[in-house]
Image (cartoon, rainbow, N blue to C red):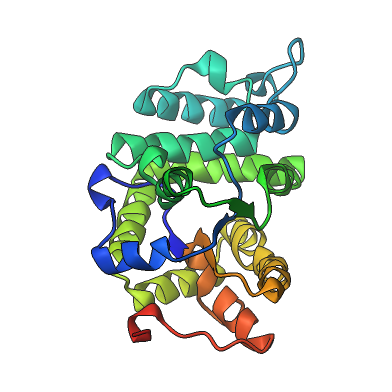
Length: 259
């Protein structure tokens, strides 16, 4: 199942055929289970934030980026004193979520949030392909210049309106199951002339697919009926999960073709 990490309340519950398919699974497997707030907060404290007493981000970046970031912080209504305790990648990621919230899209209505709620009410176990710690380690791995470049690009895309256009396009593609639009987006970003955007895409999308496919392969050996739910962009393209599973000998059939 392709997920969307933010959404609207009106997106759920899904249509009845989807609900019926979901009711028959033995377990729900996500990229990471964020339902344990204590675990997630502990992982964030050690990976995404500067420790108390350490210099803040505002003392580590150049004056131009600081000013541009302050403008976007005001735009999304996020306090600077909280923002400056974050590492560049964490602040950039937070700004993306905050802008989405301003546009009406919330992580509370993500596909993952719905599936966690479903698992709880139906008594279904939740598995993980990666885990919150592994995902944060991946985000924290880039060098300092790479992290600063990511923050700079994020701030510019929000201020310039490109981030909003991109989000609305991805939401529309997800809602309409528009595979062609997803492929077009992947091709554009994967071939971007911007090395920061291209590196981010390689690390956070295509670079994770092989390991996730291996994990899915190992899980399926016990013959249980799993719902595997990861970000929709991971499925498409020659390096996507669908092709990776086919390369491992699986037959992958679009759900619309399943009776």
